[in-house]
Image (tube, rainbow, N blue to C red; front, side, top):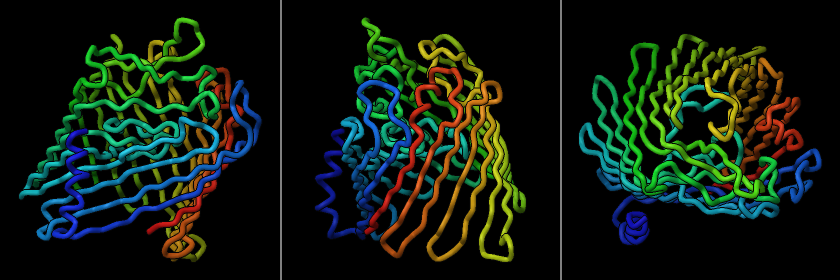
Length: 395
């Protein structure tokens, strides 16, 4: 945190000497739940919120040094825990020849599949923002990278752990018992235990691949009830994980695979997701492209949330379509079903976006829990099907 404070102090001093850019957005979001809540204290109906994310970038004249600051703030009208502030990015980076160093807070994404971000492990999930695990908290780190003809090697040193955010007792998309913020850790150093990750990535012809090793506190908690059995307490175990992501590109085909091996809580298991996306270009003699997606997810963990983190994708098929109009407004629609092969639990998701002009953008997102099955994890959301509309002003 001390490095972040120094960065905030230096930004005004460097603004005159460096190239500077200010961008970002402010958004008004309204989420509407179609059913009344199933748990006591949860709200019904609409959930309006206000989001602000400015982005400041300073870059030296020789382009070798860069300072980036991206704060994030959300003010929610119904769930106090969804009202939160975070530093998504606040870092300094320097490039020298084949080497680059980054210090501060950053977001890093790994993976290639659509339905599940299996190998993405550096950043913690902002779970109050959405349950799709795409929104991430900023992670304090030192990142050393070298790029050579034979590939890219990245070393990540992470001195501070970020706990996952969860809805409060009034919030929707939560478990039957409210998740308490007083987390427990396997490590005696708790949040201060350092994590380390090493990743190698490269491409060979039509193949793109990456492989990594992670050692530290797992981002996914398991849950243990408190003494009175009235709340759930997140428990973060130490893990060792080896993962890979592979993508093969051939004409209209994208073949994708993510897999990992993890040692956690005295056990070890394998997990994988793979499939393809095939794109039909200029359908019906138009400028639009249609992508057809099919993926399968498998997880080797037991379905016991007190011994393992909750499992959403253990034996599931995902099928979907992505329509890209390739128009001036960058209109796009993504729709998909996730179906559990054993319990037949079904989830439908829809995402649509369109630029209204150079500054305004409209987005629509919807998630429907059509068959919740008997598992506690999925059954908790059976009344939480929702539609979200967001209007954003970019600057």
